[in-house]
Image (cartoon, rainbow, N blue to C red; front, side, top):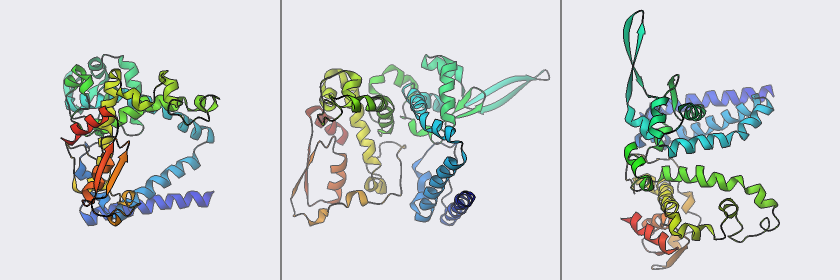
Length: 347
């Protein structure tokens, strides 16, 4: 065990040195944890040596933590994931990131030896954040504090919170006033990452909470029918998920999901390399290669061959393939309302 711990420690130390040296050699500084995210800050990952070093550091650090923590604490860390999910969902749907972005520096005035002293702090007091969200300050503060453990937000001083590089990715780019006034349009005109996160932390978490019950139920446990999914149990509906999204009452969910799929397209390697579909600054750049689209030899298909993407949503994958395989014709097949969303996304 001692040798294994030392090996993991050495792996982290050497990889950190490799990463910093690669950043220095390439003139691509490693990003600061409290600076807002911008695509250019990810430039260092385009260097394979630097990208590989970050992967080794992260993987070894997780292994090291699992080795040194008491087993019961390691289990509690796994179990507590749902608290982080709930805290993240609350921050997203209460527009906390946008509130903090708009706050800018805060001037804190206090008395010191009978003198009025001013100190400039970045961030906003939880009482003001909660007031804007119309929720309890103490409860919201606890939720944000959970997220600060993973550097998603930071507590500058007690009860004063600010954005970090990670939390800034949850910024729609809109004003908090607009978001609270028109919540149904929250994700329209955005890159879709926040929509994707909101979908996963909300509905996704609810679906997963019923996996065991669905598995044990004789009526659903061995069924492959689309109406026997955990989703149906959660919302007590007899429609498949996609047909449920088509109903008028689920307009927000349908539109959110369409925008969310656009964000997946922006995270695909081909789109990242040349910045296609960039509608605002919050787009993730990556050093991923193009293996995800090399499973089939698309160039081997005859000119004017037709590729049908069944259930292709708004065409995220097909658009990427079409732009790199101009000799092919692509047809995206989906439900009527989804196709309408696809036309909007293409504009």
